[in-house]
Image 1: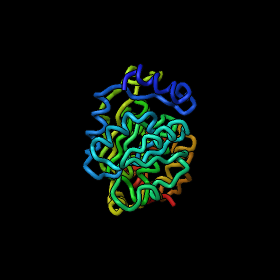
Image 2: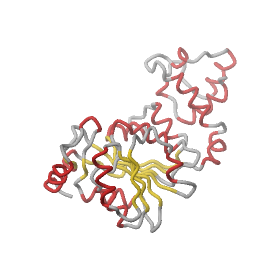
Image 3: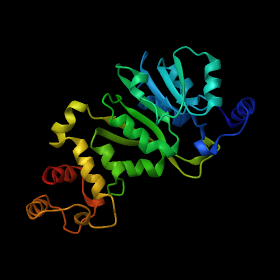
Image 4: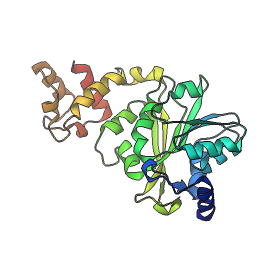
Length: 270
């Protein structure tokens, strides 16, 4: 769908893109191909799509044989898709962050594939990755800065990168996407982020502790990120010795610890 076709369709639907909802429609075929290829869509796959908008990605997923459950907050676009009456497409009008995704996808394997509204990227990753029944894979088009932060590209951890790392077996940025690949163009660069969740049953074994316990400690550690980590976490004398054995610098901040160090630290701190 090119900009001219988008403009015509928007006029029929009664207005311009909603800036408050962060609506930017993908118009680049190469990026679209990258997303669906990374999702390895097979006939009959269940795909949850967040923010289908005018259906550019939705149409491609359907063409590949997926059963698409699309959550759309904008009533205009939800009604538009309902009127299309496409086979294998279920439209759910509402706020994706407030809905129970597992009730929508059921007990079958599923995939999360979406051009995500930038404002909900962290929430969407958390809901997908930390679900009791996580997706087989996550392929999302997000703000490039957020994708790089999720992967700790600068070598510094954040709550987001730790949250992703603790429950994932693979993370990759597949493609950088400039503003001109959207209509209207956003003010920032975007990226296609691929994440493969770690099976729930393997997580505690991999880290030696439940990831939820690690995150509880990390939230305290990142509460005041510019302060020394020891200032954010009460450390006993015994625990202080344990820190040294883990190779943690006494002047380290929360961002300086690797996911493995966070896991080992969580074992020593009550």
